[in-house]
Length: 384
Image 1 (cartoon, rainbow, N blue to C red):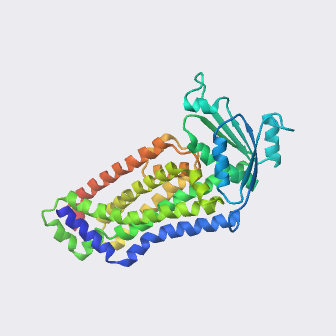
Image 2 (cartoon, rainbow, N blue to C red; image 1 turned 120 degrees about the horizontal axis):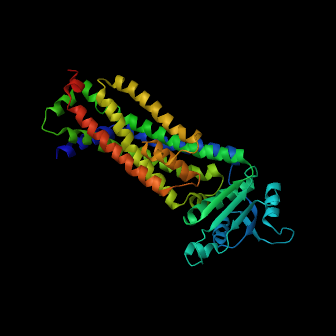
Image 3 (cartoon, one colour; image 1 turned 180 degrees about the vertical axis):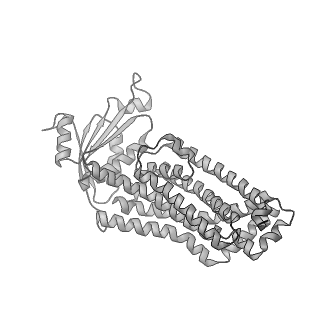
């Protein structure tokens, strides 16, 4: 009951101040505006119309899935030309057409691709699919963005390779996907800071924390009474950021909402949501530790600025450093950023996402334990 009373007090403090609610909604609005402007600058106002010309070597039902996704975009058409065709007999000749701009992409499927995925094929050969395009060509890049997302979510039992004739343009797209998780984490941190910063330090200044500490309430209940409601409140900001990502992706990628959904996939969006949800209580707990160690809100604000810089460094690392190993799942915040980047670039690792999700909650529990121990220290609470 004491825990519920403490949580009720924190909820009342938040919902009694409409300005705090506004700070929760602002991150998602900013993400949407920033990436919508970037998308309009890259692709121009409105949705583009494309007529795709794609060579196909081998056979797979996934071509029909891609064709249906293309048709879902108003004004988009696709012509799939199976090799050998008139004037183009080999894969190498088709590659020359793609590189020269006479075609937009080449899809190569291994023999018996669908049968191998379904487990009905002969032998133990791993099926493979290759997508080759030229991202310097806007039409080719648009098709690759759509087809790549569908192939990423078509199955996890085959080898999938993407080849781009313009490496610099592909790097720019990956950079944009890397910066989006960075913005998400920073905006979430700002939202958490606005409601958490004075959670303990503010009550120290007002003298209300001493009143709570002399009661029979356990220190763990007091810590949970701070972290749980503040995390729930901060989840409003997380939801706002998540919606900002979903709504801005179509404009950022220059495609329709339906194609953006099929490109990232329902599973990809679910992983994004889970990662964001796991980061919120972790950041709230970290700020609460800083607030507990501080004697005034001003002091807590200074320490939190240092913590924010650390978060920024961890978040931006994923955008500029390639080839980060699997060990990243053990690093709080950075694990979520790297996994979100993987989802947005079509290189999602489900096990990394789930492990990062679980570990972030483990780190949150450890920070709650630290807060409880700090609340038991007279030197920390009263400077004795």
